[in-house]
Image 1 (spheres, one colour):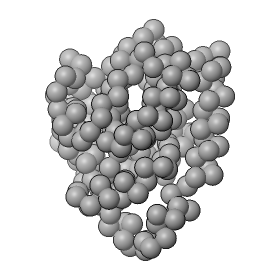
Image 2 (cartoon, one colour; image 1 turned 45 degrees about the vertical axis):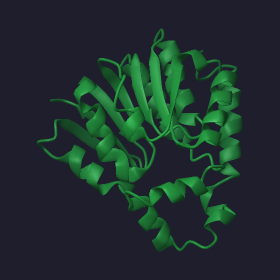
Image 3 (cartoon, rainbow, N blue to C red; image 1 turned 90 degrees about the vertical axis):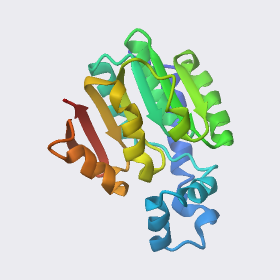
Image 4 (tube, helix red, strand yellow; image 1 turned 60 degrees about the horizontal axis):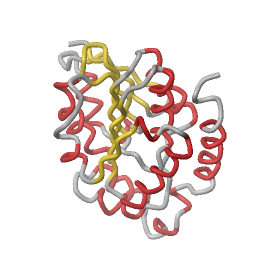
Length: 221
């Protein structure tokens, strides 16, 4: 048995995924007055996304079950000890990554979130899952909170916050990425500039799409 597949984490994740399935963004009254075109524009905007995510403060926005399992597998297989996550939300992806750190023998996961109510929920979930000791949550704008006090080397990065900021967050962390480090970008199709960046032959990354909208990249130079 692993931390991911045993109590208290496994039943907790089952509850959280079930709750997320019953509380999807498209069913929220907060978006009743938004057209698909307007939502798409907000997702692509480098300034207006703040309004979008403020409306989503009560919505979990989790990774899928498959992506969660992938995160755990990649962190375990790469023997990750230092992980950075952009976008905590309710902490479902954080729980998967922290479980991998526990089973790797320990480490540190730095995650960030600008919505205080989501941080409170994430802290409660991390405590319920028994992995709080492995996680540091930084509150505020990730462009500031991830600009200092980072590990000397980073083994794995998850990008799952505001999509227009993916290129900027990667640039903040880039000098700390060790060769062979992994970057997983959820909903990567909503960040075309990021995909151009990591798929460029001169980028220093080897990058492939996984499933519908997850991009997995490796630092190779």
